[in-house]
Image (cartoon, rainbow, N blue to C red; front, side, top):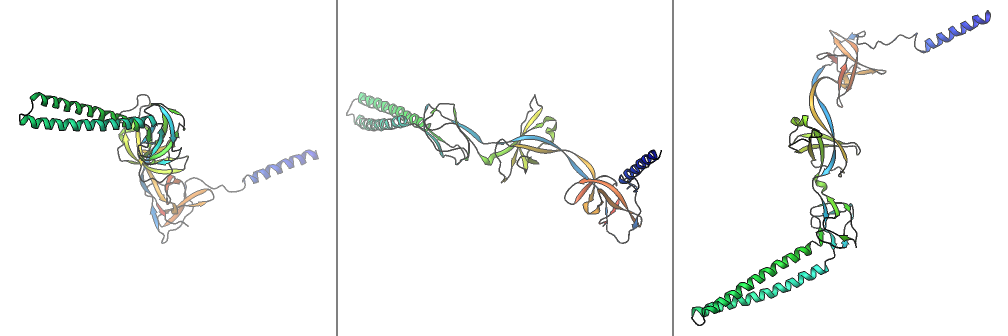
Length: 350
């Protein structure tokens, strides 16, 4: 019997201990929005809870692309004699990037130049002969047939000269195909050939892009097309690089994709010094609507533990009131619960 009494007493003692540890003997903090006991207002600075129109944002993903980019290939079949650049190299427009074997092409140009010089000499002789014969005809010293022969010789010489001149231009053009030059200022992104390889028409050899033409390309829902205008500026973020940019709409496709029901929008970055390159993941935020929110100064709140309060002016007194907020900017908060528009608060409750 005595043992049972001791067991019951021990159980009751443990229950009382657990109840005390759980705060059973401590008065609970009222977390409702009932005003707590107040204090005199005196000469305190106050602020009024204001409303403000806040934007509603919708995010769309996209990719950083270069508006000016090119993949270079040969226009004739030839062996690669030199590759003068590597991946990552910066080049200027006109810089020679690749030379193809062009010894036979160079020889053809020289031969055609010599042939053209010969045709020029023949043309000069024919022109002089025609002029001389024409003068003799005027003096009636030669027959008309001589002038006809001189004219025919001149016309033949002119035709031969033009034909050879065209051949030279063709030879020079073909020779030019053996030199691959940069079409614009840019950065090399791919090198697909090496010295000794055989270049063929249409087969890619190099790729490059102009870093000054980088932009974001995004598919925006066609239903939001009416919100978009050229020149608008929207925030663009690159989460992987922790970069924030201001994107300006530079192009909107006039038709939507049937499958995705979206339009392609391009945004440029003015005077951006950020390290961007094609292929980066990006996100743009578009303002789609507005909603009214209650705004208060951050300085008008204070905390007791984890709870946030303001001091509400009630007549000539101020009373603490529990509120819930979220950040708006560095100095202001958005009120989620606790006060209404027009409520007067102490500007600095502490």
